[in-house]
Length: 281
Image (cartoon, rainbow, N blue to C red; front, side, top):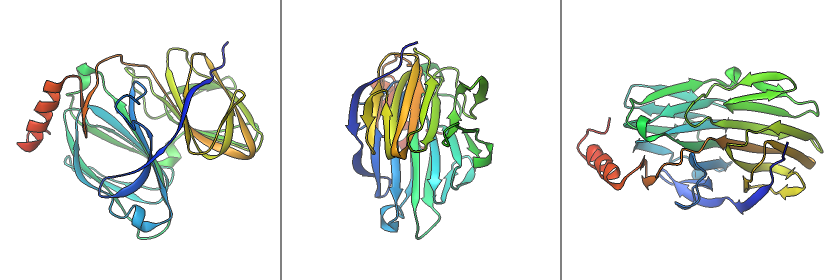
């Protein structure tokens, strides 16, 4: 077995999105900074209401999936299909935009901490125009694996075998095989995970410090991982927490224009026209 190492690391980019929500762009800062099949990941985290109150009013998507994971706070999702979902701490949302969805994500609090992640997961060309669908997954439905050293692993997507037990996350996609996990390690705790060699992988540290093998991954840093079939993590003296993203590359062309992600420029132009003429959904 070969343990993965960090090939590239960089700081998350402070930016704004939606109607002015302050967040950190962990992945997708530039068109060339993606990790096939993942297009983007944002981390929103603030105790200041002014940073998040404007929310994300009605906006369109086409051609990919979104995964939203709430850690703190309360967000309301609404879309053109009549779906309405309240995301509270620990809840997960999986939305396939497919041929088109128009939705909003708005804070349901006027004070306190708001924290979570949104991940954009690409769809293969053959599935980009499928009908949109939406699923809310309550915190209680997520597999929570208590680790021997006192930490915890919450499995959001994919399958994982740990200590001879197989765990299955609620998000499953045979095309991109996403593996997404929220991993919290106690002070000095060590953890070795299997990680299929054909999957591309990224780590984002958002609490404390964790070492990947012998390499330090400081807080608010992203790390792209090299080849291997295992992942060895060690927490710092105050513990650490990170998000693991891994998936099977699609190896298809990606053409993006804001909220539309297709394979050709012509498809992007059609998406824009469909949205302008009310035919996106």
